[in-house]
Image (cartoon, rainbow, N blue to C red; front, side, top):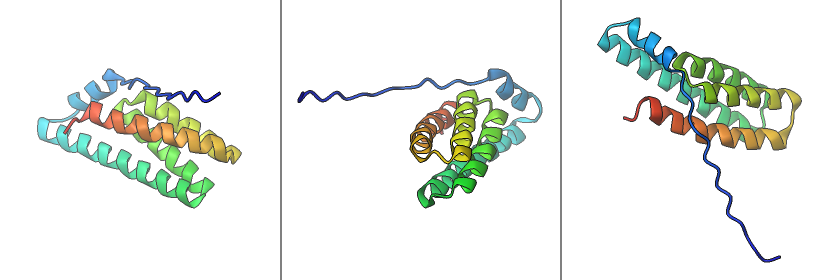
Length: 121
């Protein structure tokens, strides 16, 4: 009974390449880079907002941040992040604190890896 298992699950980052390609086709190179940087900044901002709301126990703020984060992630083609953010919003609506904590931690890990996958700078 003294065995301790170290569980480490690495979830893959899923990108919708057609979304990124559409973003690239719509604008010139300098505008494209600026648009990508703006979307990534927005994504990070909503991640920070959800973290603050989670820390404060603000279920409504967490739900709102998760909805906005999912929308931004979809625009970037980050399908995994959008799906997990939608799960977080669902947990927030149900006021399930344990599930919110678990899904929020998962979202933070996945979003961080996804941001680096889209823009490794």
